[in-house]
Length: 423
Image 1 (cartoon, one colour):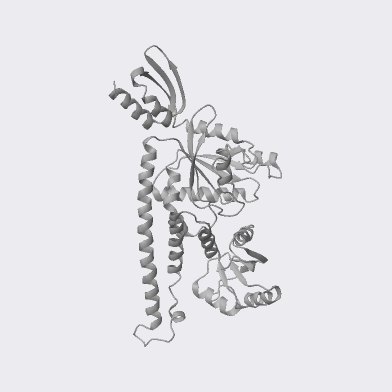
Image 2: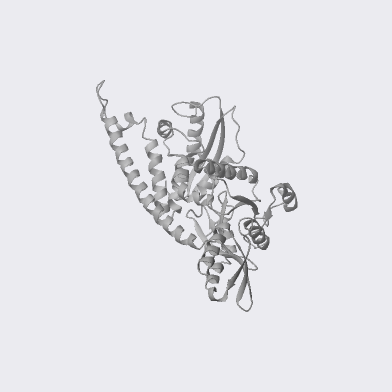
């Protein structure tokens, strides 16, 4: 699939008894634009039944064939997942490349991955997808039929291709596992003097990278773009709170409806870090007509992830971004008031102070107020308190220093035990 201005017909096919989303083709169009494909026509098909060989019926195929010639179409994009046989038959009948939503998303991920781990994960997802589509292609791969009861050349070629892909998958998994172990060591070192962990999650293109850039006051030149999946690789940066204290904020990969399962599997190691955070900021695009639907998609994905890992979800803070772009801001604020929300504009900075205050308040449920009296001869412990705590305040007396700070139970136990051991 080339990244030039390809003219495409976008198709969403559903049975007449099935419910459809109003924006399903608009989202597919955004995916196409991300890959440089221009939507010439959007078609919502309602079928009595799916055709086993061509997915859609002959009448619809003839209608599309006429449109291809009339509009100069050079690609057909389905929001549906169709079988390899159906894809091949459609390609032959329409004489036009057939692209599925899954393949489109995989292409976008391939073009967006930047780190070595991200590239390996996307390659693994692509191979898993290709492996799943080898089945049933014996006749297509074979140049001649085999003798009855014998293994034909097509079957042998499938097995050969499958073995190559499976070997590559094993190799990639080993490489990713090696990187995962390296990251575990890095996390262990980082957690030796822990800080509050905040994960920013949300539907793709809700402004997560823009928010992280705003929170860090633009110090790190964080890439952000108004495109789906503009950034894939997680990025963690330290953010300062007003009045003292810091936290580590991580920008995670965006979610989307019908995210291919092989991508979820490939990026699971990265997504698992969300469950290890102290707080989740669920960022919404309040200007989107599908804001509520996107909210449910993200919430469902988080619950599924928690069930898979058998870990409880951290507390979630609902943040509604792009309030500056919302056409009816007062109405929307009232509509989402039940979410105990914070309303912001990451682009303009509006509401960021309120967000940091709300974040700090939520973190204090785990990072509780503490108090210690430290002898002057043990003031070296203050260095560790400053690194691993929030809101550190000191008051000196003749032979001691009174320290007030916020820390988790684990941090406080570690600091206290060190203080006692050195007395």
